[in-house]
Image 1 (tube, rainbow, N blue to C red):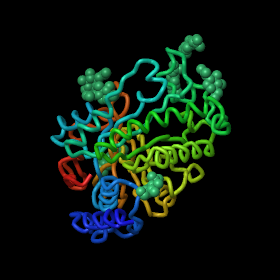
Image 2: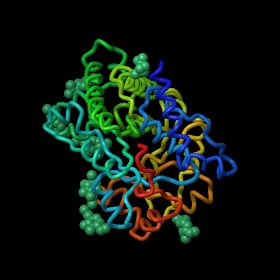
Image 3: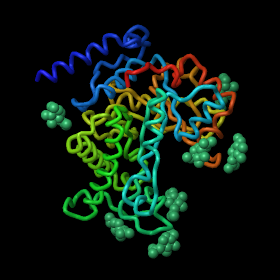
Image 4: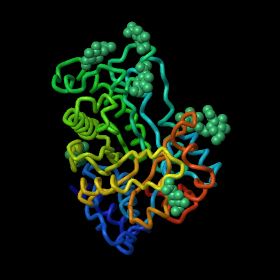
Length: 349
Ligand SMILES: *[C@@H]1O[C@H](CO)[C@@H](O)[C@H](O)[C@H]1NC(C)=O
Ligand SMILES: *[C@@H]1O[C@H](CO)[C@@H](O)[C@H](O)[C@H]1NC(C)=O
Ligand SMILES: *[C@@H]1O[C@H](CO)[C@@H](O)[C@H](O)[C@H]1NC(C)=O
Ligand SMILES: *[C@@H]1O[C@H](CO)[C@@H](O)[C@H](O)[C@H]1NC(C)=O
Ligand SMILES: *[C@@H]1O[C@H](CO)[C@@H](O)[C@H](O)[C@H]1NC(C)=O
Ligand SMILES: *[C@@H]1O[C@H](CO)[C@@H](O)[C@H](O)[C@H]1NC(C)=O
Ligand SMILES: *[C@@H]1O[C@H](CO)[C@@H](O)[C@H](O)[C@H]1NC(C)=O
């Protein structure tokens, strides 16, 4: 009890001296009420995770945080604009059982630690290769429904099956990586099972119920079994029948692809849908994008996306470079509505 009280007091003190904390109340614009719930779902969340969530909430409608997938692509952003993205996007991809069995090694956690040490925020997604892939020429795209027959519904309905155990084993492998980050006091925006509602990944292939069940299983296993407390849980599907629930989601998100360099699309209808989904009580993020939404339009339309996360450039086919010209990137990264790494508060998360 005593320890808990001390902890609460120190959390309060940190928040009272928080530089940007009161902004949301000062400038909150017209139509969208200010978020009123302040806690993460996990009552044992680390101080750093709570501070990061508090900061993100305080910036809703004040600024948008810049984000870029892939460490190399983030450096390219610096070369092109003179600024690093506030958030670096990374992937748990190679840490699960199949890639490991195929001899893959990952340095994504090391990259996260290095970027955090420079003052950045980290988000991790997980392109989860179906855990029973064995075909050496096929496994690498084994997150796609098309490339695997792994049946998530059957597995979840049979906790004694070996497929269920494979799911648990993979979650445990990822939890071990998250634990390394927790040990370094690094909070993570954790975004597993992304785009479930699309159906193109095996976790969404059998409809909303198995996807939600898997997400809740993962949340429970990582939080209550492994005691991983440095996570802010991000869910990126929009449809309400896919929503796993307020008590396991901290940020609601959408992946926006407009496939046009001249698009002025700010995904406002998706923003409104997510806003209804979380009843205005959680931050809303653009967890992937190709063209970055124009900050001038975001301000004009009052769209309070918390952050954007530009997709990595893969052979100029999508993402960073094809849909964002050098001059546009300079404008975005130097815009007063856009937060870059150098502008983040120091020492809080
Ligand atoms: C951007 O990311 C992709 C995918 O990780 C990588 O193949 C490419 O080399 C990166 N580009 C740069 C300039 O780092
Ligand atoms: C592995 O996948 C490749 C490519 O889809 C296919 O041609 C091959 O027959 C598969 N091998 C086995 C053993 O299923
Ligand atoms: C895996 O799925 C993707 C997307 O559906 C497809 O483009 C790719 O060709 C598939 N790969 C294999 C080896 O079947
Ligand atoms: C993977 O599991 C599915 C059932 O979930 C099964 O139909 C398929 O044959 C398995 N694939 C391999 C390579 O074991
Ligand atoms: C949270 O912390 C309390 C007190 O230390 C502990 O009893 C409880 O098991 C923890 N819960 C989780 C989910 O880690
Ligand atoms: C986006 O807005 C700019 C400035 O108003 C305009 O010049 C451009 O044509 C618009 N693009 C599209 C695709 O409508
Ligand atoms: C991608 O575009 C850049 C210029 O924007 C060019 O230098 C590079 O060669 C292109 N890469 C590929 C794989 O086409």
